[in-house]
Image (tube, rainbow, N blue to C red; front, side, top):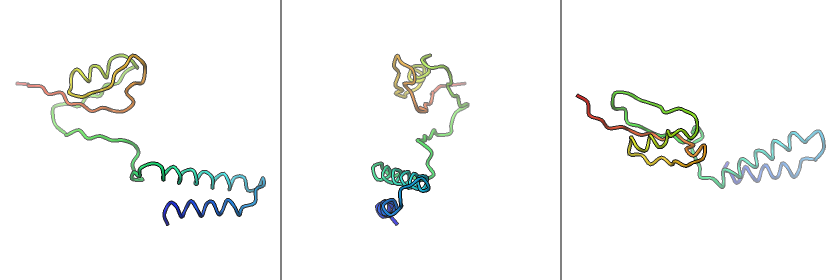
Length: 109
């Protein structure tokens, strides 16, 4: 059963359900499902197990480092200067909202 069929079934169920205090919860659940399916129609589909955007960094080098700190202290600027990434930096907090991987190339003896 596709999304359009599910939406039409839920709309039919809402139409035939009496509206009273005893059915408020059931109607609320149906409306929530309806909103979820309509949102799925508007958004491009992702896999159901996907929790968010991911990234891959090739396993190489001697160490892995994560930059963690207070807002607006220069983490993105430092990352952009040290690596070849283009991390957005601005004068307001929470400019960078996602993880940005970068690799520092260095020569050691």
